[in-house]
Length: 90
Image (tube, rainbow, N blue to C red; front, side, top):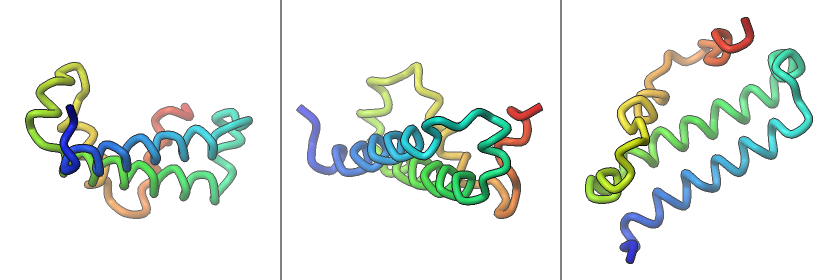
C-alpha cells in the first residue's frame, strides 16, 4: 500500500503528465515549437514533475528502477529561458 506521503508527489507527477498530454493533443513538433503557450505549459508541468520526483520516498523510487529518477529530477535544473525541446525538433 502506498503511504499518503508517497501518494501526493506521485499524484502531482501523474496530473502533470495528463496535463502535458492534453496540452500536446493535436500538435505536431513544428506546431508545438511555434505555440509559445503550449511550450510554457509543458515546461511548467515538466518542472512540477521534476520537483515532485525529488519528494518521492526512496522506497518508492526503488520499486521503479527502470525510471531515470536522477534525470527527471534534473529537468528542473535546466536554465530558465532555455528551449528544452530544441534537440527534439531537429
